[in-house]
Length: 293
Picture: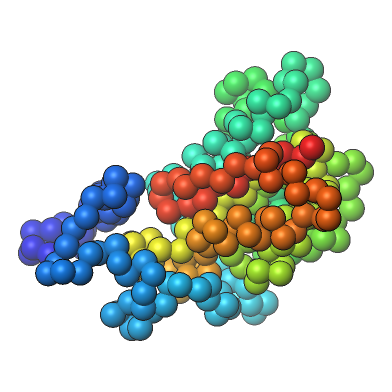
């Protein structure tokens, strides 16, 4: 890296984003950049030379945010930064893409659309959905559930989240008066092991009227090293600095998500796979959309 770029990146978050966008362009366009005889993309299925990092299988190292002893002030800083990162790197846009896909199967004229997010954190996804629907005069009833009381306290404290209901609960234990039309989660599934992810898919399918969608991470070296650099220069949160790159290592490959969804289906419901869409999205995300039969 040239001294000029290095100096700008130390003082400009925009430069870091621009470089990550360039990496995304190269990956998406499958441009091959080689050093000697080694393709930069070959590391996707091999062990990294930097710290012997392995991207072939999911990591099950626990994220700090999943601990029960994290102070509330630290969680608030973490939530604020994650909201900013999602806004700048397209995470919120992917959530809206999932929403738009599901809304195509709903009558939006009279009855409000009920939407539940599990693992809602600070409520930023629901806020983005609320703003989107208000601009388009779509009637919605929004609710979120999270097992972490600090996250829900933060969500309830934000004036932007007015008219959104928040509940402190394990998602499996929440009492629903009726099935929401849509259930979704974002950056939630990677916190769990494979068996637990299958249970999440099955629960969302059984408890939603129309279907569900999932927005989560693609486990890839470029995603890992990009977010590691981004948080190193920008973040003031030790939670973000530790958990953001670790989240990528806990993320998914395409075939893993396809297999987990197929395996969660009860016997005789294999046809549900035909009602499922899985797409790669910038920046290194998967969008899984599943309609109920």
